[in-house]
Amino acid sequence: MKTVLTLIAMGMAHASLWAQGTPPSAPPQESIAPEPQTSQTSVRPVRLLLGVGLTGGGDTLATVTYTDGSTQDVSAGGLVLLRLGADWQINPNFSMQGTFGFHRNAINAKNGELAFQRNFVEGLGFWHFLPKHRIGLGLRQTSGAKLNSSGAASMGNYEYNSSLGTVLEYEWMISRSGKVGYGLTVRLVNEKYSVKSANGAPASAPDINGSHAGVGFNFYF
Image 1 (cartoon, one colour):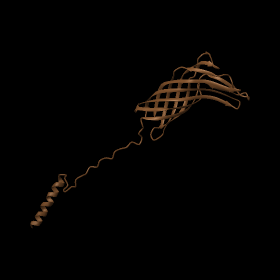
Image 2 (tube, one colour):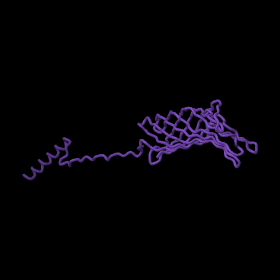
Image 3 (cartoon, helix red, strand yellow):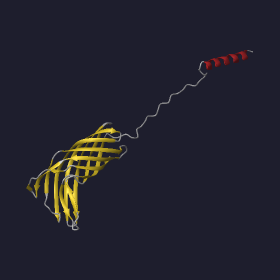
Image 4 (cartoon, helix red, strand yellow):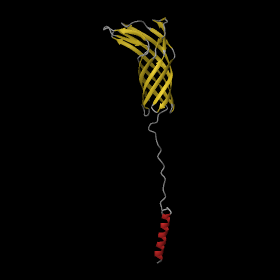
């Protein structure tokens, strides 16, 4: 009889605990620490930049006539540019970029060559108005500008001084993460040249408009 009463008392005690929302002999619950999250799209703040581009515009410096009667111009705003530098993302909304490069427009034939070439240094500040889109404004200084000709295209050799120019550039950062990033650029450049010498002798002439537009592709390492 005592055994039966004891079992009934234990059953009532368990029922009371369940009614109060506390299950009897409930095992302690262990908390699990969340695993640290690692970003798969982190971007190094400073990256090397290698850029290539095509440009067009500016005044015509010379015109070449071929034997078939066709012509081709060498302009002060063309044609191919290469640049190397660094890009520094200061925060998610702002970055800076510094580059130096080589800009050349040339006509080559079997019996002659005509080429306008110059070096440049650029510094730009960019505003990131969307995660993968930014627009920048900066300065460009060209140096060593010269027009060389030889053979049947010979029309003399000229050296130029250049004014401080301005650059407006939009870039779509196609890929910003990983070991190599990619960006597509569209740019407008405003600059001028003045004749310094002709065939080694001092010379002067009206200013030459070297302003141009271009598209390019940047690689980030």
